[in-house]
Image (cartoon, rainbow, N blue to C red; front, side, top):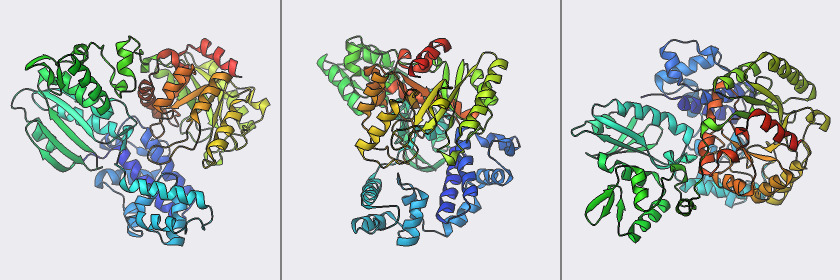
Length: 574
């Protein structure tokens, strides 16, 4: 079975979690965490490097020990180190580790001091008030733990879109190679660019007597064949993702693609429009009585109900049908519209490439500018910059800008917003920069009012440029902090500053609905990669997908501007 980068990263994450529970050396734990993050950011699969006998220690953050473990995972599907750790602890402990906002340090307290080994025991302990008595918890935290544990016990498993993409790419390539296959398209929530995917729908067209269903069932990564037929089959991959394959006729391909792409609410609305016109719309086509009148293409389905083609990302029944009918559909932003990336990290802090390497990689991707935005001093875990170190980096930026042609490096900082709304670097330091990125990395548990006021006060700072990953959520890992995004968006409009859509697929923060709110208020959104390694610059396309779901057009996005226009906008905030 193929082993993907996400599988290797998941093994390293689990090792780090268990080591943290056992109170192991923090430097060893951090090595696994950094390796996991770097592996997820690679733009290619490690198995190909191993097949070519490449030296893995040349990769950022990968020494001999970790390189050997990567090879071991690729060869066996696991690591002996993880197996030993798993054998020392209950299997059910992993369910607790997956809960948002908990983390290995708190799990260690629950496990070692309260002997909690599974979700049922955790919920019972919370209901009995045993957790609040532990250091670092309290009644409010106990209530939150109980709520997320109960929700997790019944929650449908969903996969981050970035974790699904390698499987889509591999399956598509595999199925396209089957003799007689003409088209292979992933539909559903994946095609709508949703941040998470529950299961995967793949549509194929093929000539008669194609063996595509047999090949699908024989795919290397199949854990279980759930069903197998002549036109539909279902498999479960080893990571738990269910994949449904549907073989459709060429004459029905557009109708099937429209049907299996749109949300349920969108499709119901389209079928209602069809009934009003005496039409029946389903996955087989558009029918007038028994005659098929459309369905070969998606555009023909929409045309049958007097609508233009609707981009997949909009098909959620959130006003797109009315906008299409009234001629108000947005011309959605494209990846090629972006002129630069305004949030990157280098080896000055917790990044893995030099400033030069990041700049040249950005230039290779067609960018005209990037902004160096290292963590500030408050974030010790990321080796944040104090004023002297930041000054040293700005001097290197000046040198590189003299030397490098075709790419401009802007001077910035990702500064921490303190609980009282202050920024953790002095005004005279911030005044020397091109942009100041405000973020929250601590005190997530403030009340809605306190958290909102904290951010609003920070946005009033004369050097504040934009708010990065505005809700603080990590998908499937950490819930967003309580904040009134309506107030934040209106404040950005009044203050003339901006909001970030962080394209890191663990974040994808802003939400699509907040992107739409920002657009309506006239607040520009910066789509940034938050890259800590060269290949993570490519995460930007996940951000573009989220932006398209949020109805954003080229002019709604800050970093679609040419450099001179961008610099004018940045100066207005400083």
